[in-house]
Image 1 (cartoon, helix red, strand yellow):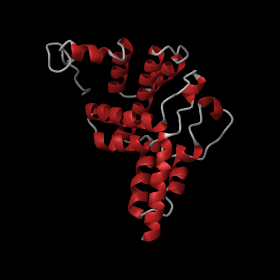
Image 2 (cartoon, helix red, strand yellow):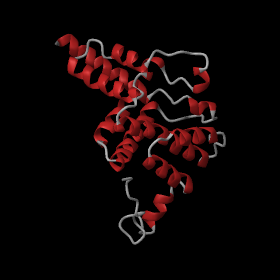
Image 3 (tube, one colour):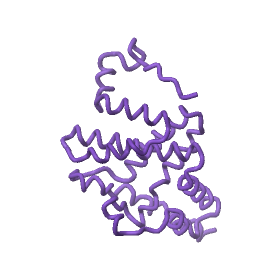
Image 4 (cartoon, helix red, strand yellow):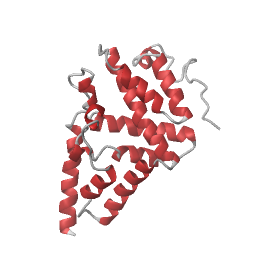
Length: 206
C-alpha cells in the first residue's frame, strides 16, 4: 500500500505539469502567452456540466470526463494540429494506462473509465464533454480576438463546425453574437442579477 501511495503522490505532481504546459495551438495563432492546459480543462468542465444538464444527462459525469480529457498531455504534450500531420502520439487510453500504473486500483479504474468513455464518444455525457472541449476553444478564441489577435478565426470556425449538441450550438451562437464582457455591463446596469432583462427564456431541447 505504501508503494501505491508513493506512485499516487507522483501522479499528483505529474498533473501539476498541466498548470505549466501551454496550449500550443495558440502560439501558431500568434498568442505569446496562451492559456495552460489546466486553464482550458477547468472551463471545459464547467461548460460540460452546463451543456449536459440542458441536454438531459448527468452533468457531474460530463464534468468529470472533461477534467481528465487532456491529462495525457503531461507525457505527450499538447501537439498542435500542424504537428499532428507529422507526429503520431500514442492513443490517450494507452497513455492513461501508463500514468495509472501502480496507483491504487480504485483510482486507476476511476480515471481509466472516464478517459475510455470520453474517447468512445458513445454516451450522451461523453458527447457533451467533447462539445465542451470545442466550445471552450471557441470562447477562448473570441477572447483572444478581442485582445487583438486576428489569426484565430480558423479556431472559431473549426470548433463551431465540430459541435454536435443543440445546446452547444445555441450557446456558440450567443457567444459569437456578443462580447466577452457584456455580462459585466449587465451586472453593472442591474440587469444581470435578477433584473427585468435577466434570463433569455432558453428551454432545453425536448
